[in-house]
Image (cartoon, rainbow, N blue to C red; front, side, top):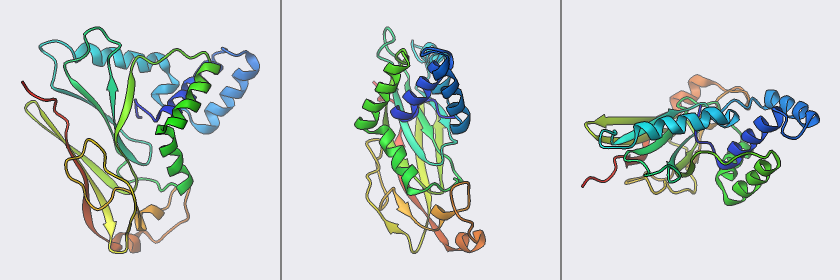
Length: 241
């Protein structure tokens, strides 16, 4: 499960945890519990103490002369891919290590366009503003770290490869594409050193069967996927010297 979610989603789950434990009274607690179960609010944000405890653990490991060059939090379960980097500026002295969350759901359950836009909205300035409104209503304390999205979101069947060699770390994202795929807008992001045609696409894999889509002939769709596209390559290692 992702540690660092889109800000709007994080704030809503933290708000839900607060109202479930009674911050706004029993009526809100009952409403919050129904929402928690129906929407399956299970990410780290829904358990703020655990969220902050992981931040403390990473901060402990990531500072000082013996700290690793990089710390990578590997995540999935959200039917798409993105990269997020936390800011440990609230911790005295900061961190020596570069910390990244690398999120990828390789064989994804296809999600409709509305949910794709919802994920993008969650990272937007408007989404962050709305999420803070939920947090204020739930009297939610600020999380231990701030974070920003530095790559993605990418949708479709894809695979992230993390290569560690000595104190170096490199990330690569490959996506399955078909000959009939139409390129769409979207830049790879500041982490990228090289990009393919586009990182947002439609194609046969966007219609695979899943909880939100109609059944398809998987064999036919797989046969139409003729190549892989490298959508992102990035060096995660901090500068030396």
